[in-house]
Image (cartoon, rainbow, N blue to C red; front, side, top):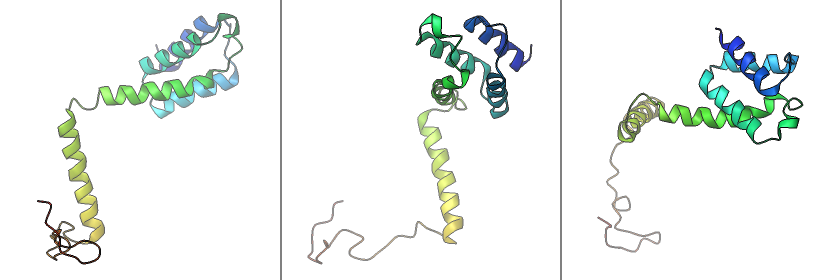
Length: 133
């Protein structure tokens, strides 16, 4: 079954309606085009309709569930983030930042500053202080 048809059947079952409004159909196509996973969309819609009384479900527009779907997508992405642990993700992002900064600065942006102030020997007024390391 296609993404759109499966969501359509799921929503009609929850809402108890016989057809979707044009706005709801547009919203489902938007979710499909943006690449929201089917299970995330279903869970977000289900949770959204659970928060409201059953007699109002047929009157609620489907697009109001978008915030719930976005929250679940963020959680889903974090959960399935390439199977890497947090350290590996951190170092991957660090390497990417170093590469971007290296291109933006036109060279080595990690050059060590050897002035006395950079080593922590002087405070703002120029008075000598102990180094922090």
